[in-house]
Image (cartoon, rainbow, N blue to C red; front, side, top):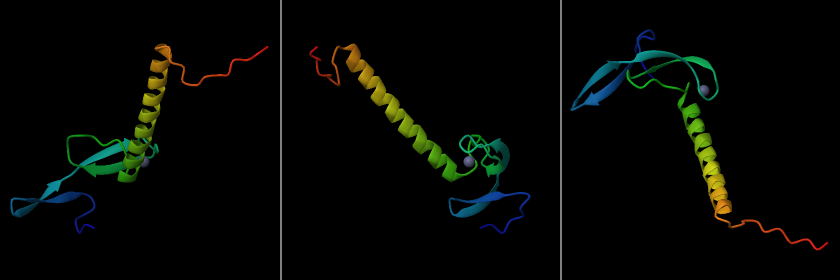
Length: 94
Ligand SMILES: [Zn+2]
């Protein structure tokens, strides 16, 4: 949704009652999630790692899930180390 020239994208920001167009920096990157080579325009500063916000959200979702799984595993290991058996197997009678 921009009527600017394509070769110099800017972001219109509102600062204290007036608007100014901030030139965006061009980043050529390979998306950390879908591994697509792409070019994105962002504010200078923090280099983006993803080709789109969708990928960023998806990556965050996956990372969050993995983190939770890792946490769960760590907790189980902790319990096992403390001598608490989570799943008690029935003693087999020979
Ligand atoms: Zn991507």
